[in-house]
Length: 315
Image 1 (cartoon, rainbow, N blue to C red):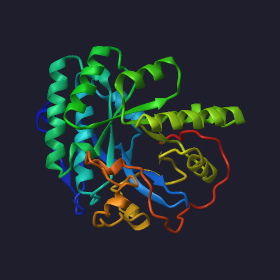
Image 2: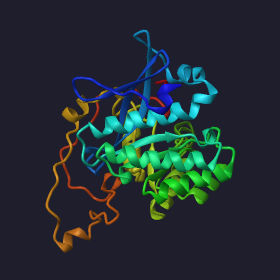
Image 3: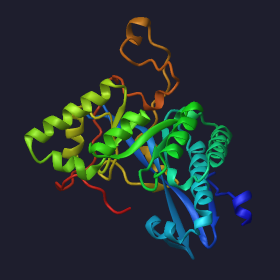
């Protein structure tokens, strides 16, 4: 198909891109990922990129869209979605935030595919005015069967300075092995699994211990599926560094309201050596996911919602 060789990207009057696959119009939705300081002040550190298809002007859920993609087109569509998201991130106007994009290793049938994809990622990232260090490649477990392909993909991305995240961590044997083998920069805890551990005091203690251990290993911990205020407070209490969920912000197509509610903090001059030791420096040039100490600020809290357990809503 012609679009596979040279996909068409159209810009709207605000500079954001759309593309298409067959009868489907594809748009980006971004959901913010936050850090919070001890006073509860929220700062956007990253966005998760989500695809929003439409057909004949009506929204189609990703769960319905992707099964309709022809098997021979699956890898090309996967690549198309990432390129769309990275282009839109480049026009978002944020100079520090990172972008989480999904990779399904099961779509890569040959080493040559992996090399071409990594090279393409580098090219579109630079064209968007971003650096690879601001792109977090979220490795999904689904369809990742061939371990050689999985490791070649992760090694190739890391060699080009992209960051790696493991999704849906649940601490069973396979998840523990994934972390030990892939050595990710970020771990996203499975929301349903976290919910079970919050039901008892022993579970809470074990969860805090796990978070502490990952932080000591230099791995950033992200809790997703946060639905209520008490869950945000819980994350702060046990030292979770990054948070995502409807209690904080919903995904938005062409997100501009985020800038109104959570403006990016202006850059400040380098701190004197005595203050730089507080963990603000980022020698790797990846400050977008730095979660060192921050200066106290007036708390910004989401509106009150009724109490529910951790979990993911259908998006």
